[in-house]
Length: 396
Image 1 (cartoon, one colour):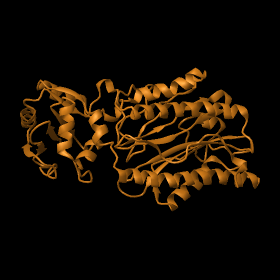
Image 2 (cartoon, rainbow, N blue to C red):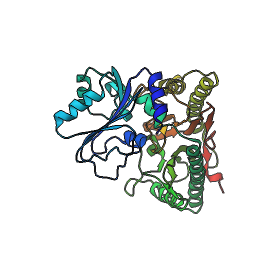
Image 3 (tube, helix red, strand yellow):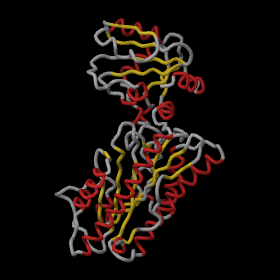
Image 4 (cartoon, rainbow, N blue to C red):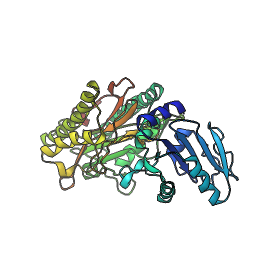
């Protein structure tokens, strides 16, 4: 944590300070930015205030006075609730506007963490509470070059796993088998484990109408046996199995045949064009040193699909932040589920993943790439980019 950098960002944003608050390790953002030890039992409220100018202030309970000892600043210890409130009021005296993990109208739920009662308490001191969303993007979602290298390392593995999954489908079909979605998922799990990857759930292996469900999860009970003529969507995400590594997340489309039907390829071309329009906007804005917002990129992507007549079938945001979690806390590419008005910042990574899901035709399409913006503003796509649906039976 760089106190000087945080204070400079607070001054730039015309905010008097950033107030961190937690109870029972609920705020993972605070834990990561402040490097809190969440392995220890946490049963009492604590506060850490970084003013735009001056020394940080700590407020901790007498039972857990060690809670913020690793952080710089003056420590205050409270016992009764009245003392807690009086000391917090004193710490915030002179501040007119402070940032907290709060989002007006819950617009950005990733940073809407502090409970309404605590917001009420701070406001009762005559202090305006504003969202820390942009600060979180700068100090929690920012990736170093080492982080990016771990992302690329994960990407090399996941691209291989995707390729081998398509080949395994081809091998089994050619052998006269009907591989089930859950079996291909298990095949991918084995490859991922053998390459020292870690993940929470997934990957998605989805055929035909299952591909029309953006969050389909193959199980023993619901999996199809795949056959010639099936459309296959594979969505996979994981990171290297070591502390601080960054996720990689992609989606590719395949067709079990030697030639991809025109209907299938034409729908994929639409989502591909939408993906490329979103990427192009980000590239153009950074090339011209012009701010670009998450909602704008979503609009640019969504417009392509709407203009092609399939807007009603694009049922999710265009993309999400990527970091230590596959869905990170930085800016999302979204003007559907939320209007993400945060600026895409250098040093951040995000997905672009438009989709078209037509349940009544048993068709679902998605293409997904990971985009990283360097500290110098160079826009990079990590790994190969899909240009055509993979004709699976042409694979060796």
